[in-house]
Length: 257
Image (cartoon, rainbow, N blue to C red; front, side):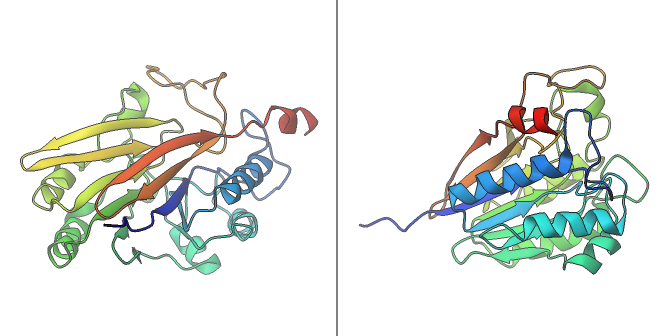
């Protein structure tokens, strides 16, 4: 039997843009690095791009307009969700927020873990109940996307500001075997783990940021000076997925800025 063609997704995350397009991050130009990652993603020809939060650093309308302009260069449809640094209302003014993407054989659910004024994330009882209902009514293979990691990533200071109701989240997911993977931002580093549940396993993946990579395993805040901005590619087959991280060399870019 001939296999169905793969669907390729890309994940980009954690831009930390400011209203000033010339503003600097800790390790370069956030806007220019985002533009370089967008160009690299286009060369991969994804069918869809997921943007998993922390679009802004200063939470200004101007920063979201910069992001929307840069992301408009993507050659595939794109969807974004908020992170802890974001203002969802300002994002919505700039571009609609969606909670689901229908891919035919698959679907992607976009979950909002933003808690106003807090670095940690939370879904809350109402959102968890809604997630349970949504999963109960559709058994297609499902990918969940959010900003905060729903499990420890082994970097102590980040684990303190992850998804505070992560255990409740996994209890909701556990009966729904169609959930294949969870992708998230927030950690500014590549990460993968397997969450073992009573009736199966769910893959969990963190994504490198477009700016200021964090040092994995650090007890306190530290940048990974040897790392580069990156993005995640995800290929969906009939019921399974394959994923990997690509990096973007922006050393020359930053030396010129």
